[in-house]
Image (cartoon, rainbow, N blue to C red; front, side):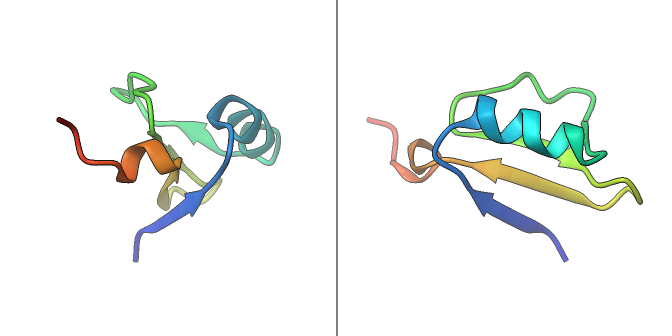
Length: 57
């Protein structure tokens, strides 16, 4: 199972998940709208914002 977690601010949320033991996955270039991490056991998850749900023009 893959989990996406909606957050208001990626930088604030990233600091929190990293403090809890998550790691930013290699190759995740910190795009606007989402970032991919692994929990301490290695399960991937994403932090996403509303921008990631808005279609590009």
